[in-house]
Image 1 (tube, one colour):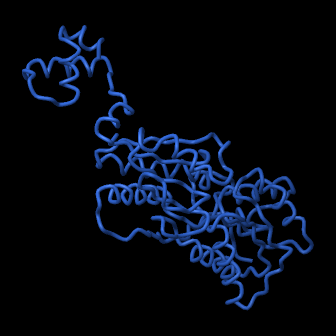
Image 2 (tube, rainbow, N blue to C red):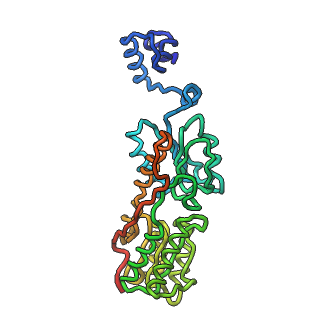
Image 3 (tube, rainbow, N blue to C red):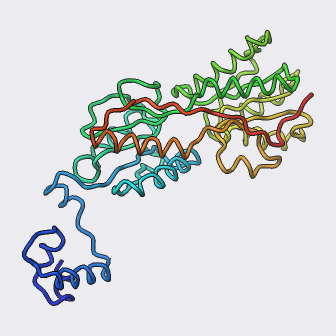
Length: 324
């Protein structure tokens, strides 16, 4: 404020009045001070602002790490915040905070002084006592008393499995996600249900855990693709795992989809850029972020509405799957 006052030729007290919208300053002086603030890029301290008003007009989006899913979700939240009057703060521990309870530590650093509420992506602990309004996206244990936004993971997995079955595949391998995530459990349950409904038994040796990451999915993918007999198709429970299947197939001189069909889940941007482009189940990730942001704003404003939002999934046919 001293820099602004010196440049505008007014007192620090006058700048303080302008910044805080107080009376007693001529409009010409207000215009001059605001012009200098714009020129200098001045911004009031969020911490100081929250002490005065108990509001920062900033919402947080908290993730364990930035990867394709959370990055796409952030795009949706960022687009939705534009019309709300709030600003958005994205916060991550850089992958170091993925252990149980990471969101508690993040919230303790940010709530009350920097943010008015938070969207937490795949929280490990589902509870309501966070100090500020919180919306969970794809929580570990599924919907609870905490407001949540997710996709219909079970129906999406049924859709993926039925698609492979419709192509004539019966020996289908499944590359699962993280055992601690409800979405992974539901995707495996959907796979098994679709197989059972079709009267096709599931060979448990063809069910592996890929962990939702390319690097952790490579070895389980290799185990699937070197089985005898080898699955004619693999349903990977997210696109990063499916990309690992494509990489491993290439290293084994297997052609996709001629030797093995592959389908993923999520429809992250990378899925359209693989060779061949990946058939996948689209969950509207950006819309998940937008809906979570809107729900959070409504909670802060006291709007009565449903606090559990579930979005539909759909099949995206590309070149990584074919009929037998």
